[in-house]
Image 1 (spheres, one colour):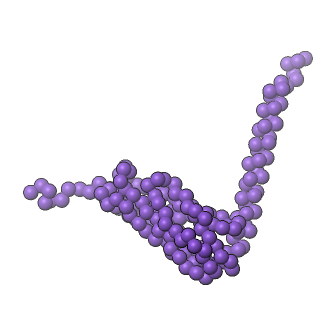
Image 2 (spheres, helix red, strand yellow):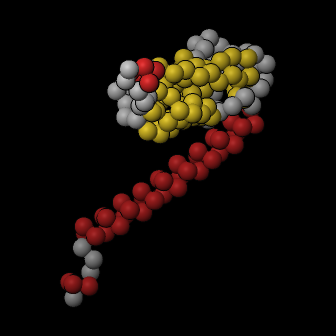
Image 3 (cartoon, helix red, strand yellow):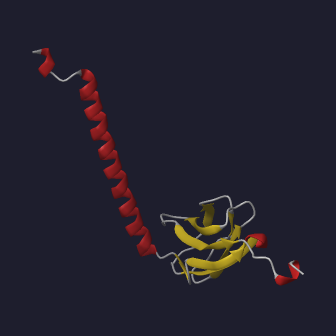
Length: 154
């Protein structure tokens, strides 16, 4: 008779699993609603959101590209911060308020020093003021070791 009654541990585990599922579904709904409302307000619109460096030499060190944008909203936007997917990537962005219709530039730098040769793909998230979703920028390319020139052999 006792074997057919679920143990307290099993009941608690089922309850925790149900609550976790409910939490995940709730967070997903909040993200969708937040994204929809932020889209209606306008945001920073970038000319390009991906920059391909192509092949860059490992010895080149720091390689920088720029992402130009315009504020398409009816209100001032501030870039509150930037998150890069790797320590090899740094971001320089405007720290002052960006007025409606104003343009600006974000510079992203990839440093090959201490990184392995081969393809790279990095993401930068710009945290924006208000209920706006982060702006996502991406850099990619291939870091190569340079081959020796003929002069090095003669």
